[in-house]
Image (tube, rainbow, N blue to C red; front, side, top):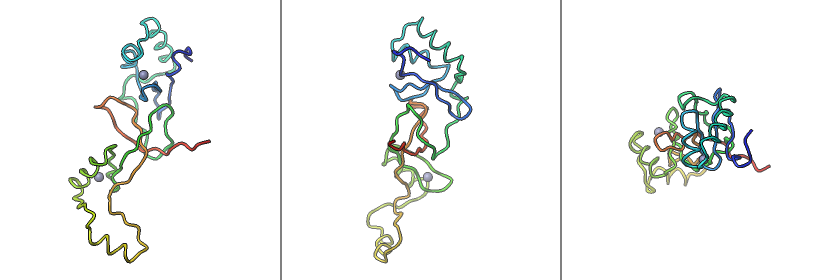
Length: 165
Ligand SMILES: [Zn+2]
Ligand SMILES: [Zn+2]
């Protein structure tokens, strides 16, 4: 759809909406911010931008973030978006995610009253009895993506890593 020099740009279906993915910056853009992104980050000339954007519009690019639903956890990774290591709270109905282990620990302590510490006596006892898998840490390492890379809009969802074909 685009000239070779704009090969970083592609259209991605997210739920019922369509977004423009910039594979260079690993983020998604919609009608309300694609122009600025192309101008500021890629120095695309105004005329060329208008052309690209007209093309994206014709493909049904979503108007704004509000029109795009975040994918549910557990699907395949979205093409073009960065895959990050994250930590997800194991508490059912919570599922909070952070890419910062310290942050998720803080979350588990503050929200779920988790008492951390390697000296958990119960943990030791259970492990010596064998068999039982210790779930001492109430969070787990996962792979995550975010549609939006602007700090205030970052919202992670869990993805399966693509398998090497
Ligand atoms: Zn970009
Ligand atoms: Zn939680």
